[in-house]
Image (cartoon, rainbow, N blue to C red; front, top):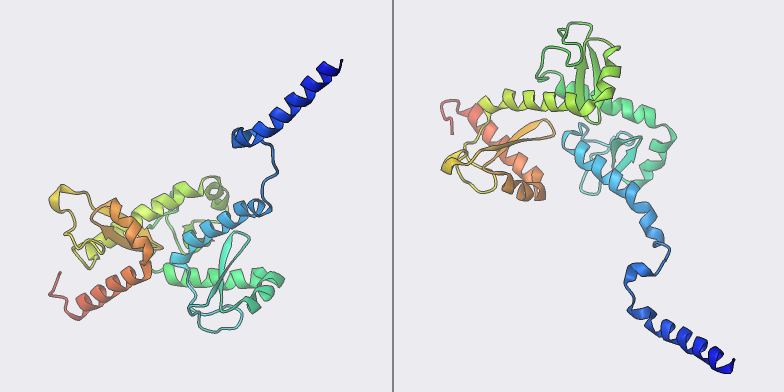
Length: 241
């Protein structure tokens, strides 16, 4: 009996000493507390990335102060709100509908004149005087009537893809530069397929998709280059370069 007990004790000691050498996933452990916040943070970051390029306000919707480098990005109800400082956050939380209404009005005002399609993408009907303006994130979607909103909500990505395609086609003829903003290579040279994308509602043409990573590092600087080129073209319409 004593020998049996001794063997059991020794076996337990041996297993304990080997525990440190077992695969990590063999040790059940509760996940770190901070991991529980990652899905929400990731979701908010995705909303900011998607909606920031076409965010229409240059001032805080609470204080009316200009949005500077210290602007705060807040996501409420899946919508991006940019504030001048953290002190304005509580006021957004108290009545988000009022703030969202300001953003919606600014989105419509900024994008309606250049909306690229003349028909409702749900019903196929022409967009006439009674057309309904809907804001999806920070993008405008025009519908022939309120009833089409249900159709849009079934597959918003498909509708937005059609709007994106139309925006690109609309802007290609007046795109102000013939070279890639990143590499400086002539667009379409060397047999490469020009990579067309939208930054918000603005067309950006790159020599290849590989340049997208560099564009994302300083998108505002790249858009500023396009603005400067567009201004130069307007000042000298004869120059098409």
